[in-house]
Length: 339
View 1 (cartoon, rainbow, N blue to C red):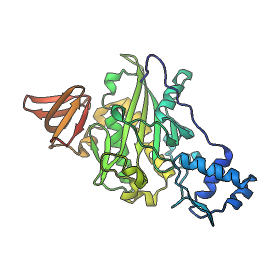
View 2: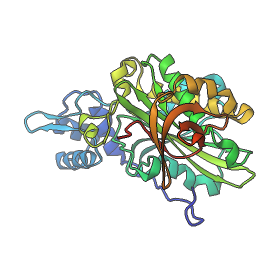
View 3: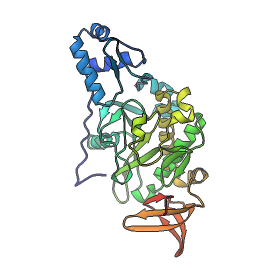
């Protein structure tokens, strides 16, 4: 994705040290008085109040009680580079370079903006919050502060974009398997790369690419994964939403550990895809296909097609059995809501 030949600008919006310290103090979920916070930071209570208001404006759920102080209900698990790195597989950690941002418009856009300066495969961008997170078909990806995972990975492929047709499916397959191994309930994939549990949509994958027709291809793979989506955000989505808290895995693994599991899966998946292509992942993807054998509607550009989903071919295109015969589609959106 390069619009008008220009790379997107995605400047990180890093917090002040005082604001970070207030978050750190409140992350334990206990009540902290304004006086105590002011003393620890050597600032005034008025300054503390201003920082609290700024954090609330960024989406951090901080409760205040005039007689007691401030608290974050349930606490907050902050992402830490050192903790994530300590959880990476040995062969993966040699490749990964973590870039941690407090707040940024989009982790995908941030990596795309770094391309002109040069990036190494394995560069990973994480953030606590996206202010302009992107989903498929131009939709907004809700990205509240400090609750979910927003991870983007850069990878250099020598081939052209046609040979990368099954990449997003491969990423969905490896991430899903990694989460199940970590203790999550069965996860299913809706073509091409949306992750679902029995309660609703768990996450999604967005791929941006800067490529020549025959290669090379500079690819940014973005993953949005619900870990503990706040209840007020559920109401902002037009479909059922699931998160890892529902599966129990978020009770046994921290956000840092979950981030490491996802990064291990993504980087390992890219390494294998470079060698073997989508064929190496097709059977895993098919075993998790949530629409196989069901009547679906596919919207591809201005075209709307209904038929029975018959899995995917070796290039990752979905195949539908329609009144006109068996057709394959490499792009589009599938829904089970036909009527």
